[in-house]
Each structure stands twice: as C-alpha cells, then as structure tokens.
Length: 401
Ligand code: FEO
Image (cartoon, rainbow, N blue to C red; front, side):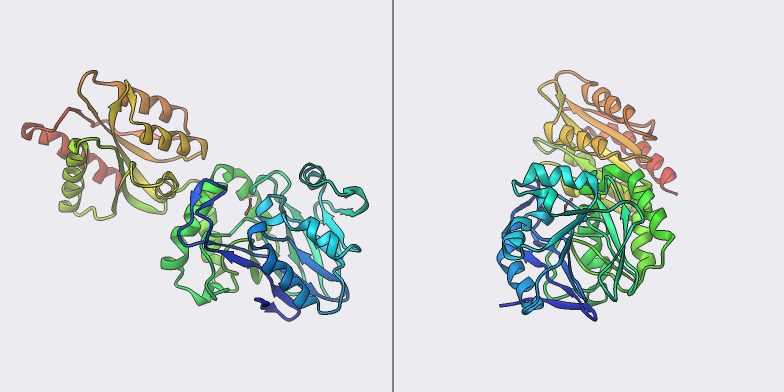
C-alpha cells in the first residue's frame, strides 16, 4: 500500500521509516528509528529528489509507482550519494529506463564506484548555480561539499521556495505520521535527536556548514525538506540559529556536563558530591552521564550543548579508562571547540596519568580551557578532601556566569 504525503501542490514526500535498525551507519543507536525522506515532483517532467535506504526500498518503489500513476519517471536528482539515500538507483533504472540522473561531477565518480550500470549514458551534470526546469518548477543547484560527504549538493526549488537540503537540517527518529515541524513539540521531540544527529554525523564539518548557511541566507526559503526527519515550513529562524551555533561550536547552555567512569563507585561518589555542591549553590544546569552505560553519541551531543565539561576518569591499564578515552577521541575528531574543562582523576597505583593524558588530548583541540582546580583521588575520597569539591565547584560556577 502507498504511504505518501503532499508537501506542496504536485510535490510529494514519498519516503519511509525504519524502526528495526538498531545502529544507524552501524554505529549510532536509534531507539526512536529513522526516516529516509525522498520527494517526487509531478510537473511536465517528473522529477525524483534522492532515493532511500535499501531497507525501506519496497515501500519507496510502491510510493513512486503510486504517485506516477501511468507516467514515466523522467529525472532523478542526486543530492547525496551515501547509500542511505542512493541505494535504490539501480532498481529505478530497471523500472524507468528512460530516467536521466541529474548530479554533479564528484557524484559521477561515486556512482561508478557503487554501481555497475552504464553511468555515462544516464547522467546530466550540473554545476554550482545552474538551473533546470521541469515545466512549472525551476530548480537551482547549490554545492555543499562535506555536509556531509564531498559530493553533497542541495537543490533549491524556486517556484515554491523549497530547499531540498540533503543531510542538513535532518534528525534521527521516525516520523510517526508527523511530517511537519508544526506537528511536534520541537524542544522535546526534535531537538535532542537532531542535536545528536548533527553533532555525530556533520559535527566535524562546521566550516562547511557555515558555508552552506551563508549561501542559504542569500536565497528566500519558505520550506526546508531534509533527507531525514521533519520538513520545516515555519520557524525556520529557530532551525537556522541552532545550525549556526552548532557549526560555530558555540555552547547552547551555560552549565555543566559531567562525564565519568567509575569501576567501584569511588569516582562516582565524588561526581555526586560535586553535582550537589553545584546544585546547592544554584547551578542547576547539570547533566551527569556514566560513560560505561551511555553510548558515546549521546555524550558527544551533550558536549556540544554545554559550556563546561567535567571529565572524571579512573586510571585503567596505566591509561585513561577506555570509555572515557573513546569519548575524548570522538569529541576531538568531531572538532569540538570552545569548552571549559575540569579534570578529576582516580588512581590507586600511579597518580597523574589520567590528568596528563586528558590534557594532551585537549591540547590538540581548539580553544579548550582547562580550569585550574582538580582532584586527584587516591582510590577513594576522604572527608578532609572536601575542599577539592568546593574549589572545583566554585571555579565552575564562576566560569558558567
Ligand atoms: Fe543521510 Fe550522509 O547520509
């Protein structure tokens, strides 16, 4: 059965949702599923914009057939060649042999790498700013390299002022019948998973996202149609402001994220004492995560959100506890910048290893300020050491203002 929605007159959402997949890109947990969006424009020429992941291919092909009725498919625009959006191209070629593929030059190379069909006979190459008309609708192509792969472009539909934005402005999470941003509580139902999606998928490429935002600011946009998550028809300034902040690596919240490891509960005890000291002194923007039972993608998202991060780690095999080490490598790889860090370490045999290793990693990142006060726990905390909690806490409170 078809499952489609009208976005605008003659423009249809024909995507689908996957609630079975455990790990997106075989890496990121998606407990709320994921949507793969694709769009079909029914004009004098029929134009499909991107496809979907193979896992939802049967629904997608049924949707294409339903919207086309007896018509043929004339064009496929490829904005992004990652397989979660391009895996149905070969099936489309079999079903609609006259279909032409509109894409840019880097996409051609990827088409040849992913597929064995005669690519050259199918393609119509477009460049930055070039236009294409399907009849009533005119499309303009805007290159957006590294948002999230090098071949990415976005397509601006001039008649309705729709930006088909590829991975940009997307989110994890199935749609569950709610296709537009006005259908959901954005702060509660969109923001956490959109932040986790952005920071982990595109977070590394802040400069390139800034480039796209600049180009987007030069055109009038009424609707944003991403390849994942809800379509935005209102409150675009909220969405653009979030992307601006994330891509500039500016914190959204002045407060503290505490990421810790604790093998026997002693480091956790200190973390709890610190959090309550902060709370007692009116710093209530605090979130605490145990790195051992929290997937690192959530830690990454929260690290992009908060101004301050406390890293409280145990020593393990004469190094930093592996889960914390993995977290630090991830935020470094994703280019996190401009954060204020406090370090707490716990050691039983050799003190100083954690502090040194954490500082080393932070020194390879941009503008990470390390606060002076620290606490080198020796196996377990002692009452007479409470001064350390006060000193770290007061320094955090001051820096969060
Ligand atoms: Fe949703 Fe970069 O693919």
